[in-house]
Each structure stands twice: as C-alpha cells, then as structure tokens.
Image (cartoon, rainbow, N blue to C red; front, side, top):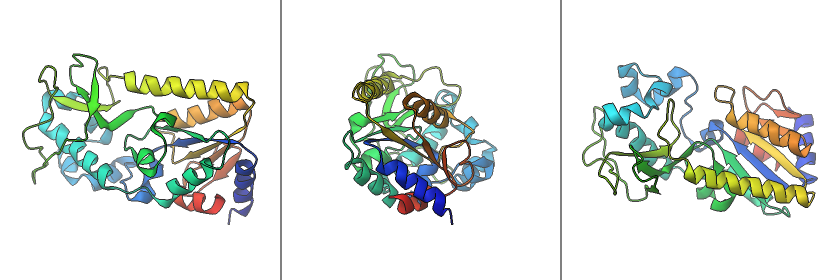
Length: 271
C-alpha cells in the first residue's frame, strides 16, 4: 500500500544534502499527545473544559490569564507537565539519524509548542517554533519584554480544574506570568525569541542558496485549519524548486509526494 509514494519519498530524501523538517500538531500524536482536532477531541482531553462549554480556540486565549488565571494555569500547567513527561516517538529519532547523514544537516520549522524536537536531540539553534514554546514564560503585561525558562515551574491542579496558588509570577513586576506562546487573539505575545529563530533560519537558507545546496522538505501532521506550516512548506519548496513530501493521514493533498499516513508510520517506511 502506497508503495509508489514511499519509493518517491525515499528517492527525494536520498538525492538531497539537507532536510527541512516541517511539523504540525499531528507530529506528536504518535507520542501519545492529545489530538485537538475538532471540539470532541479537545473535550476528550479536557473533560472539565467540556463542562464549561469552551472550545480550544476559546480556552487558548490570553484573556483567561487576566480574567481567571487559576483556570488558565490549570490548562497550561497540565500541558506543561504532559509535554515534560512525553517521550518523542521513534520517528523523531529516525529523522535525526537521517539529518546527521546530510552535508548541511537539518532545520526544523514547527508550530508545536511542546519542545519535543529539542528533547529528541535536535540542536536548539536549528529549530524555529513559530508559535513559541510552553517551556518559556513571559509577563502577562510584558513589562520588560523579557522571556525566562519555565524549568522550575510546578503547577498543582485541583479536582475541579483550578491551579493552586502560588501562580507563576513575573520576577520583574510581580504580575501573573503566562507561557510564551502565541495564542488566539493575542496582542501581548513577546516574539523576540521566535524572531531570533527566524533570523537563524533565514541565514541558513541564504547559505544553502549560496552553496547551491539541495534540501528535501518533509512535512508531517500539518493541517489546514491553521495553515502556517503548510504554507511555509510550499513557499520553501518553491524557493528551492524541490518536491514537497507531505505526510498527513487526512490532508496529504497539494504536494508532489503525498503520504496519507501518521508521522511514525510514514517515517518508519521511508527512512
């Protein structure tokens, strides 16, 4: 099944000297992370939020840190601990192995905020997290334009889905802290860290062009609902005039090589 597509993907990967690794939320499903696709998927992961009748787009909003920070930190605190405890699936390891055989290595572009690529061993300086990272915090008021690590943060959550005091606070002004994640309707996100990542990505691409490097672009688990990763994959494919490998069990359409599979299954077949 899909033998032709698998062979095509293998040919693309074999004939290149760098990897652009593009990943959306579907990349983490095989590690056991919840799939928030559709309101039922979100509510299955967070039954208490179902009782409140909130969708993911409504819950993932910085207004909760203003209006009900104990609820906001129950949601993000649970996710922080979940991502810390989750081990990246074997597909990450296969990608890292393949990247290490390439002359120019790899660069990761992901909308995921879970830090799984770093945990799998990918170099921090070769990752762009376009929506930020849950492993970093900022002041809700962004008083100093500063970002700091969430490494020492431990959130206890009550049975009625409330974060216990003390809540994470800004070390500069004492206001409530929030994850350094781009949320829905978010005008207070401090994007300096992501901008730095974007600059490193731009320099890497320029170096690749100058040296006439030939990258392979492999995209996994990036849907159409928030199409940042898909659009970026297509733009880079056009820029370097190379095929795009798109791995997605439901939305693999629109690429030169389409693999309608989950990330782990596809990577196990092509690497």
